[in-house]
Image (cartoon, helix red, strand yellow):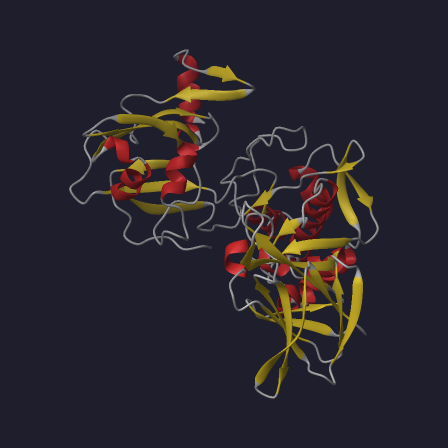
Length: 424
């Protein structure tokens, strides 16, 4: 805030679409005129992730240090919204990505009871009794989706379908997907869709989709998004936020084959494997509750930490504002140190050649150092480029990069960090 005041006094602030933009001083500490011989830049930063909506670290601090209820936490992070109760619905979850869920080995499942297989192309259903075999698999082939069962130690082909095919658990027995991922799904169905080339040819890859009741789905989300050691109020806030986010995705899925994915690109989902009594209680005590705005479920975005300031999501219920709860409990998500190899920037922007200098041009005006980096100039021996603070963060992001950055809110320091920070 101090840099913001100084910039205002100097008449340097401009307002663009409601955002205070601060041009960085040419003498700013995060302007690197000469890259060190180590070819590694030392960085400090705030926040982990995009910073829109609820801070999970902030919800933790609000509950633990300030005694806020889940309703009060949600009121703060999603202002102008109201609590609404909705019925249970079916969620179609893409399991992993198409690349990691694919492959010639196909999808292998195990069910101790019975499975019902439905071929969507012919709209025909079959009963796969465990007396034949409890283990079945579906393989994408040039002829279609080949269904096999395990007979002793040998896989025996039963039929081949045009597909997609669905494997529905009967009698409430859980279906265990053994490959390509080892998880259990209770009272759900697994759909296998074969991928095709642009010409329409069948490919030896598939997309795997679990069809799960919303409340059961949340039981596999909440313990992966928020530690179960946290106060119940924080877990309840996470449950409502995750339910609201999911319902928004359901309402906007259109004609796609699935509503939501199971990675950090959407919400992390682990199936029955991660059920926990405390997070189950948080889901159950908020059953059906979502946040709505103008009568519609909101896009209840959340991230690990906003560093003390939320960022605007472009809608009234996702404003940019100071957050007194993020950082109430110290963590390496709220404040962190990192090392940024120049090679990461040179790889991302090969036209500049060997990096010689970094100059932060503008920030958003909120928080330490003038806030999140908006634009930055990277100069090299062959040229220069103006890019975003987000792009610099993505060039060496943690945890893919062991000592990497966690958000676009960063500043370059003169002293290398002794060790890379870890998630708190």
